[in-house]
Structures are given as C-alpha cells and as structure tokens.
View 1 (cartoon, rainbow, N blue to C red):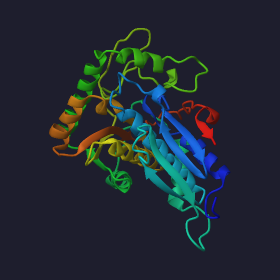
View 2 (view 1 turned 180 degrees about the vertical axis):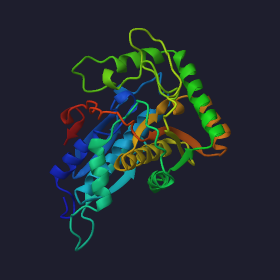
View 3 (view 1 turned 45 degrees about the horizontal axis):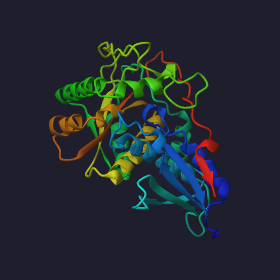
Length: 332
C-alpha cells in the first residue's frame, strides 16, 4: 500500500458506516470486499427481489446509496475517495471499486464542515412513513436538495404544482394497484415485512404502514394482504421530489442511488424527514407515465422522495436494524 492510501482500519470503519444506507424493504442487498487497500462493492444476488424488482433497479439503486455513504464516511475521516463504477464488464454484480487517498500534499485530514454534517446525518437519518407536519419546505431547502442530486450526476424535480402533484399521486396509486396482482410480489412483501423479532434486515413492525395515512405510501400487510388507505392528512405539507437521470442503464441506476443518498442526508442535515417511494420505479408503465404526464421530459424517473418537516408531536424514530459487518464484508 502506498503512503497516501488510507489504512485498513479507515476502510473498515467506512464500510461499517455505509451499512446504514437505505435499501428496498431493508434487504441490504450488498456485499463488500477489501483487497489491497481497495473496497469493492458487489450486489448480492441472494437478496434480489425478483418479483418486485425484475430488472435490478432497486438493488443497484440501493447499492448506489451505500456507495455514497461510503464516500461520505471517508470524507468525514479526512480521506478522498476515488471510485471506479462498473469496473468489471464481465461481472454484472461488481458495481464499484473504491480507493481512499490523502486529499493532497500539505493538506490536513480534518473533514470539511459539509462532510461532517453529512456524516452525522448517516446516523440520524430515518425512513419516516408517518404524516408530516404543516410547515412548508422552503424554496432554499429545495434548492439545496436539487444541488445535492446534481452533484451526483442526477436531476431532482420538486413537484409543487397542484395538477402535477395530483397526477403523481395517481401514478403512485396505479403502481401499487398493479403490483398487488403481480406474481410473487405479495409473497416478497410479506417475507421482508414479517421478519423474526431479532432479525437484522427487513422492515420492522414499528416502521410499517398498515393503514395508510398517505395514498403515496406503500402499505405493508399485517395478517392478510390488504391495502387499506386513508386520505393524506389535511395538514401534511410534504413535497414530492422526482429523481431522474438522462440515461437508463445500470450506471444511471447506480448514480441515481448515490444521488438518493446525497438528497436524503442533506435533507436530514436540514431537519427534514424523508420517505423514498420505490414503487414508482418498479413498474415500467408508471415510469413512462411519470415522464410523460408529470415531468413532461425525456429524462428517466428513477425514484420519488417524499420530504417534509416532522409533525409537532412526532417522536424520534428508532434506527432500523442492519446486518453485522462480518456478514457482509470479505477481507482478503
């Protein structure tokens, strides 16, 4: 290892922070490998939701979020990440290789304030499926979220016009209706939302939405596979954000995942609550509908994110569980 490379302990600590990244149904569909001072990120085919995510969009986007978390953790420790995306064309599961280097001659290893803020947000971020409060998200905050996505090679479109918001709500409801009758979807949803008590993956009961308070949210089954929903709370001032890319290949999905992480962490650092709505990307007809009727753009929708301020009586959410480091990290 060259002198400017990060030591092994720094890489291991960064991978451990990356495990806090969000993933579809909290499947955590990643594997990590340390080799000669580099970190490899691989998708985990065992955790691929074939019915929900037939073309691996969710999986790759989830891994992209973990990749961005890794970079944030390294930056917060004073190291600069160099990332090769899709480095092995013959291996569709090898998504990225990262090396960490000193930031430059004569530079200290004190993290920049922005990196430190995002690093703190890794531990503070939660997926919040509860109704949000009545306070509007200000334009300056939306601009910060848009800039975070742009820095990662994606676009973020706040859907604030009432007609466009209605069409987006309808598209999300359509996605849910289509998925309910897709072969295997209900089984996957049940498996990943009904884990045993000590499980370190899946959606815990405390985080599930069974009787929805927002028509945009995915409803998780209790005893039977029902989907009862109530209208959005009248004082919920949440805004929906559509994350898009100019292309629609695996690299675009990976970059969209990195942008998702950047947006969620930035939102957390601003005191906003967020909910990624992955069902928007899981149905091809709905993606096309979003592009044509909501965005009116040739860009490709990759994810919808709900953002807003927590309700005035909202209590802090517990962190959802994560798999142990030793179960996802291979050292050579």
